[in-house]
Image (tube, rainbow, N blue to C red; front, side, top):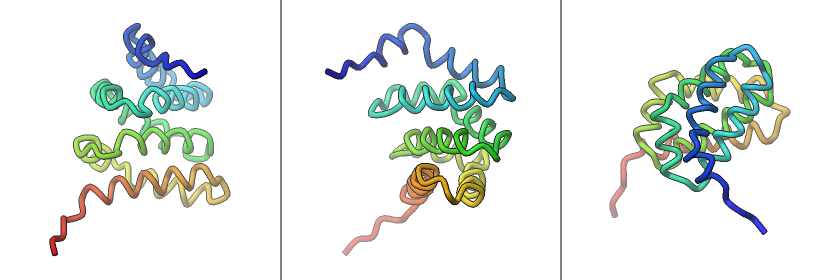
Length: 140
């Protein structure tokens, strides 16, 4: 049986702590991977959490982690997963990712880690989300 513990984690300040941990230990690869992973899990299927993560600087810390650890496939994979969820249908988060250079970060990760299938998949989803929100609606 699956139990969703995201609510008590968030209520206990989990998002704040994860973002702070990623930010305070930028050179520690393990903290970057697991921190991005925690943000990814906390944001899945929870629009309130995606808003909270973005408001607390989550987009900036994820992009910083991806830039600093461009050669680490796991940081790139987890970072792309977070960006994928944070940008799904959220124009404010899309604007923030784009304005902070997120397109080039994701494209660079995909070029660097061509053999990492999950990274490629989540990179594609992130780029899809960034693109689809900017397409004009066609009528007729």
